[in-house]
Image (tube, rainbow, N blue to C red):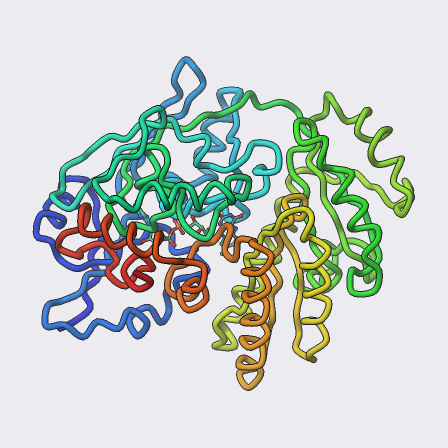
Length: 444
Ligand SMILES: Cc1cc2nc3c(=O)[nH]c(=O)nc-3n(C[C@H](O)[C@H](O)[C@H](O)COP(=O)(O)OP(=O)(O)OC[C@H]3O[C@@H](n4cnc5c(N)ncnc54)[C@H](O)[C@@H]3O)c2cc1C
C-alpha cells in the first residue's frame, strides 16, 4: 500500500473518486492545528493492502453569490478572507471571523469553526441556513436548518439529552446532531464532503477597535476578571473581546508590540454604541484606568491578533515540536478556576503564552517546549483535561479533534456518544472511506 496525493479541480472528479470508495482523508487549506500535515502519513497509520488517498479540495472552483435576503451562497474553495472582501464590496460582512482567514468556509463547516465574532453572533452552526454535501456514493444531497436531524439509531434521544448541557458552549465535546445540517457540522469530514453552504451575513456597520493594557495575569487577575464580567451584558454592542498576554508580544515585530510587559485585551465595538460602552463599561472599571484604553486601527488589530498564533505555529514547526496548546472553554462561573490552573501551569519552567477568545472564557494556552520538555507539558495538559471534565467544560471548543486530540477526548465520550458515532458511520460511511482514523471511529 502507499499514500497517494490527489488534487481535485472539479466536483465531477471528486464524485468519481467517491464512487470508487477509496479510503481517503480530504483536506482544504491545511490550517487545522489538530492535523499535523507535515507528518500526517505516520499519524494516519494505514496498514491495509489498498492505497490511502490524501485528497486536496483547495482547487475546487470557487463560487460566491449574495442573495436578496442577505444570505451568502458559496461553493468550492472560498476562504473567509475572500468571502469578506466579496461581501464588503456589497455593504455586508460575515458573522463569523476565525483568526485564520485563509481557511476555507466549507472546511469551517466540517470543523464547526468559531472565532472572534462569536462573542456577539454565536457559533457558525447557528448561521448555516442550508448546505449541500457529497455522500459515499458521490451523490450531492441537501440539508436544511429548519429540518430535524434524522437517523435510524436508537441512541439519538439520549445523545441529544446529554448535549443539552453544552448548548451555550461554542462547541461541545461532541457534535450537536439536532438540526439536519448538523450531519456535516463538526464531523470533520467523517460522514461526507461539504460542497455548498448558505450562511447568514450582516450589514457592514462601522466598528471601532480599542485595546486595554493590563498587568500580567500571572501576577494580578482582578482586572481581567472585572472586564470579563463587565462585557457579558453587552454582547449586542461589543462584537469581540480578545486577549493577547504579555508573553505574546515577543512574537511580534518590535514596532507592532503593545504595552510594556503588559497584557492586552481588545474590544471590537459597534461605532454607533461606542460612546455608551466607553462611558458605561470602560470608564466604570475599578481596576483599569481610562488612561490605559487606546484606539487601534482594524487592520493593525487583525495583523497583531493573527500574527501571534501564526508565529507560534512557525516557530514550533522550525523546532520540530508538535504544538502543545489548549482549546478549552469553560462556563463563566469556572473562568477563574481555569485562569488559576493556567497560573499553576505557567510555573513549570517551560516557555508559554496565553491568548484567545477571552469574552467567551475560551483561551489558548500554549507551551513552546524544547523537545525534552514536551512530555512534562503533556502531563500538565492531561491534568487540565481531567479538571475540565470535572468542571463540565468543553476541552476543544474550536479547533476540533483531528488526530492530535483523540487521546484526550475519549473520556468525554460515554456510551450514548460512542453508539451514535458508530451507527452514523455505518449509515453514512458504509465503506469506511471518509477519514477512517477520525474520532467517530476511534472513540466508538
Ligand atoms: C493561526 C491559526 C488561527 C486559527 N484560528 C481559528 C479560529 O479563530 N477559529 C476556528 O474555528 N479555527 C481556527 N483555527 C483552526 C483552523 O483554521 C480551522 O479548523 C479551519 O476550519 C480549518 O480550515 P482548513 O481549510 O484549513 O481545513 P483543513 O485543515 O484542510 O481541514 C480541517 C478538517 O476539515 C475536514 N475538511 C476539510 N474540507 C472539508 C470539506 N469540504 N468537507 C468535509 N470535511 C472537510 C478535513 O478532513 C479535516 O478534518 C486556526 C488555525 C490557525 C493556524
